[in-house]
Image (tube, rainbow, N blue to C red; front, side, top):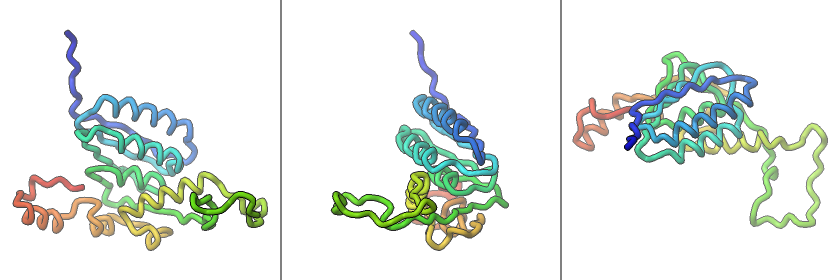
Length: 198
């Protein structure tokens, strides 16, 4: 009888590239295979300059959210992150970031009427005139969704267009925060050494 060994800790390298759509497609497939093995800990090491396309970001998010509840996710930003890669990093149960790394969220210019609403009367209605330079880009719609999801962790409206340092991330409790850890340890009667930064 063959027994399947449970992997305790798996590392997954995710290079951040400017033009790497095919790379992300391959890495998403590899991530799905790894998640199916249900490791106890999965560490995603993020390294490089660029940005993960919004659609790939949303797909990675759906895969990571579907992981076993027993799989602990560690996201390790070894480089500064921007746009979609920020969301992937935020999904970690434990987040690690290089001390001098920064996050950056670019603004999105998407018209309020860009998406058809389910309760809206749209059949037969004349759409507003848009010239060839104001066409709606589906990728921008996906990026707007990425920003909505990041907003669950950080105030996107106030932080887009600015560099976000580690000190600010600590204030939001997104990386190790000794003051918050001590408070939680006191509140729940645990020693500070038992708490793992979230």
